Length: 115
Image 1 (cartoon, rainbow, N blue to C red):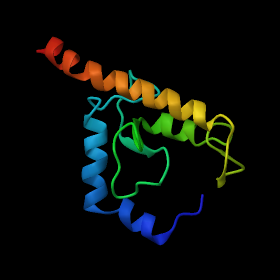
Image 2: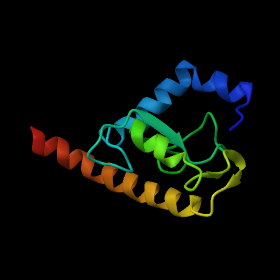
Image 3: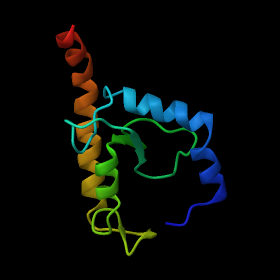
Image 4: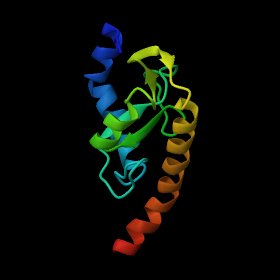
């Protein structure tokens, strides 16, 4: 994936760190692919709303292992080219959105149970 300098600067910014932390905390730092693992990465499902990302719509929380898995050719892009999405991408995105929504709903309940 070739990243623009604008994207690279944004990902290194304080603004992105705040957004990323909000995305992670929305699910109690749980991974959308492996909910039993701690999420430390916010994964962009697309870049249409760069600098105005919302959890579920634009980004989902992932563990480092899940993030590597998602970016394998068969799941996300063909031949590592971001302009050629995999045929599985819409299904993977949908699954990640649904599990993120479920984790967001369950997060307050899990916090209550842990008290």
